[in-house]
Image (cartoon, rainbow, N blue to C red; front, side):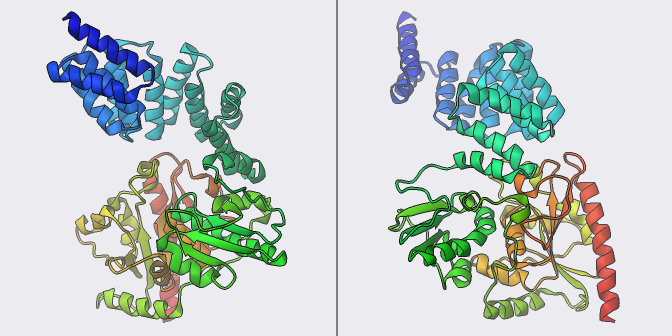
Length: 493
């Protein structure tokens, strides 16, 4: 027994000293001798959580809980690991058990608040985080989580006080700068928001471009976020090219291969468009696409929003027109509106549970007469409509190669109805009418309470009146669509 205890103490010493590999090997040897040793199972899971493997942490700590269910710390760490693994539904009852065993576990209190926040249960999340903050005043992670919940409850002054308190102690803490920036951006205070938003990306070896005359330099513009972000901010690329050309410089735009064909067609006359490789192309200075708004000093009243700034090839439009006509059933009226549907985003997105819509919730829209629906949904969610009785909506995405093909489909639609994902940005950049279904707490770029977007004139925003209430949002959209479809039929006749 003493030998096992000595081995565990040595493993813990490695763990506390930050020697992750040595600690993991020591824990492995202990478990080879005693596979049910609860402290080793627990600490092996904690080590994996600390090294970023939340899924493995859940497996190890769950074994510890099964061996010794009366110990509070493993329950708390299991709940935190479930939260980190983006499983807040499972984390919440586990953390409730942890806090029943130890009501003063600050980590469990904080993880419970964060889990409830992810589930859009904002008042409950705030209460748990306030308890955690009272238990350990000044704790940075607790204040950051509390500030984020307060921000999403639109208690912006209180949220800023939390973020400011964190930054007073840790001035370079990037997540606090970002959280504060998001609160400013969503309120339309863009210029102040852009400054904090710069903390989102890692620096290049080359100097950043911040709007200054570049002389004869080569400027590299590059993606640093997702597809929708690139589509939204590539509007600035021609403006950069104008500035560079005036001084004899040039611009390279590095994009994802799925955006290359579209960007190259629309921007390639003045900008060298490249598909992203392992290493950036030779350049003198650089700017992430999402930093261009800061470089140009963009405020709410001077967003460059002339559309279209992206457009598909006419030949692609004609080919997709024929394909879409082939998808229409014989019962479809050619005078009916053709409406595209996208109801789910990337399931790996941290807020996907709040922004995506269950397929069954679309029924009020699907029942509207005078509409030819076509699915533009990708991924596993695409099968959702097939499971609804009496619903037949063809999917157009089977032969789509990239965003240039998607753009050609959009060019053949009367309307796109979508959740907050990249295709909304593409429709907006093309000037295609688009209805965007937004959760109660929207992404910062859609601002608050308004039904339009200063970024995209062709968008109309439909917002949840309360967290999780898609029924009201889609009911409103269905009523508007019914009236629009009726007008279209009358006009055609």
